[in-house]
Each structure stands twice: as structure tokens, then as C-alpha cells.
Amino acid sequence: MSTAITAELTRNDPESRSWDLLETLTKTYLFTYNLIQLLGFLWIFSSITVNLALEGTDSVYHTFDYCWIVMFICQILAVVEVLNPALGLVNTPVFPAMVQVMGRNVILFVIFGSLVEMQNRIIVFFVFYTWSAIEIFRYPFCLLACLGMEWRLLSWLRYTSWALLYPLATVAEAVTVVQSLSIFDESDLYSIPLPPALGQSLSFSFTLKLYLFVMFLGLFINLRHMNSQRRLHFLRKDIKVD
Image (cartoon, rainbow, N blue to C red; front, side, top):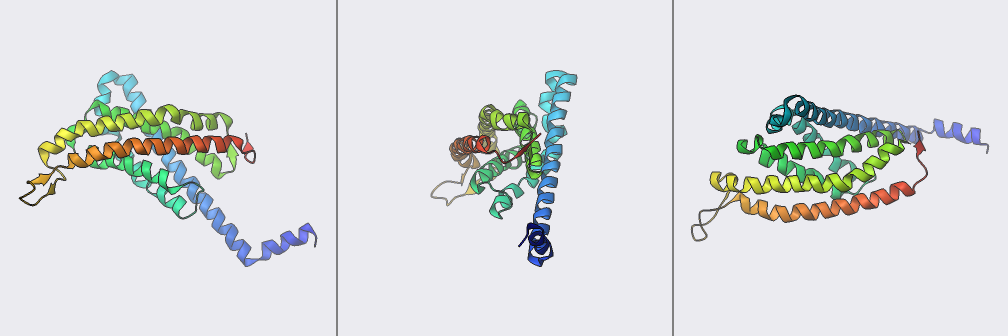
């Protein structure tokens, strides 16, 4: 059977058309998601940079005030990054994605979102800046991947910058946790009531101290994952390069 006839039969096959439609919808969804996230984190990175240039170091204390809405939206949307590999929409492990998303959610929603005292501290600047710096390389790389394309410079930045940015972001997150411990102790926020024989309550700060260990374990997992991804990516030769 000739190639032309085979192609014609494939086009007329309902199952094949359904599969092509599903693949198109998946690529469109992934492209749209990555574009939205890129615009969000690019806005955060640009806003912090511009405010720092115009207002000087005083602006770092107000980072949360002008970035929190966009950051909250981006992090809420980031939950689908755990669902995408779980549903087989992307070919990446679920666990590293879950570690990053859940870790950031603890910092953003549980600490910054719950404690007003933390929102105007300089550490917010470092957390938001490192997060957005990571993502302005990752999301455009994913956008091109949806199109089956690659830009070598962007790929190099994507698979090199993490070696510096991931540890910096984790250190900033750890400082955030340490600074919040005394506030949780004083406010009893999220504390767990205990029977009278054991005391009045278990402070949420105890949970955060345990989380510090998990945080650095998560850093190790992500660094190992990224190093593996870097080796695999630069060994592949099947991506169209501009």
C-alpha cells in the first residue's frame, strides 16, 4: 500500500482524528497556561526591578503590597503543574513538581498571607525576586517546547540558572520560616489544642521547624531532578532549533 493511500486512510479514521484533536487541545492548553504564567512572573520580576530602580532600596519593603495579587494568582494556577504529569499531559515526574508547588504555597499563603507582620519585611523581596527569576526562564522554554522548538540560549539559561537560583530561593524561604517562628508562638495562630496533661497547645512553629528539614530535602530532590533533566535535554537531538 502506498504512503499516500496510508495517509488518506489515517485521515479518514475516526479514532485517529479524535487522537489528533486531543493532542491539539492538550498543546493549546499547555501553551496557554505557560503563556499566562510567563506574563504573570514577568510582570512581578519587572515590577520589582522597576520599583527598585526608581525608588531605591526603600521599595524592597513594599514588594508584597504591589505584587501579592499577581503572585497569589500565579501560585494558585501552579497547582495544575502537579496535575499535568499525574494525568500524563507532560512527561515529567509528579513528585518534584509537588515539592516545589506545595513548598511555595506554605511560604506564600501560610506565612506571608497569614502574618501581616511578615508582609513588609525585606525577605519578601528576595523570595519573590528569586521565584520570578526562575520562572522567566522556565515558562518561555516550555512555550517553545509546546511548539516542538528550541532556542539554544534560552535552553542554556533554563538548565544552568537553577544551580544558583534554586539554592538562593530555598535560603530565602528558610529565612522566612525562621523569622515567622516567634510570631506564630506569640499569636497562637494555627496552634493545635492539647489535652491538659500535655499542656495548653502545640505551637504551629513546631511544625515549621520540621518543615525546615523537609525544605532542604526538597531542594536536594529538585537539584537532582534538574541535573538529570539537564543531561537528558542536551543529549537529545530531535528538537527543531531556531
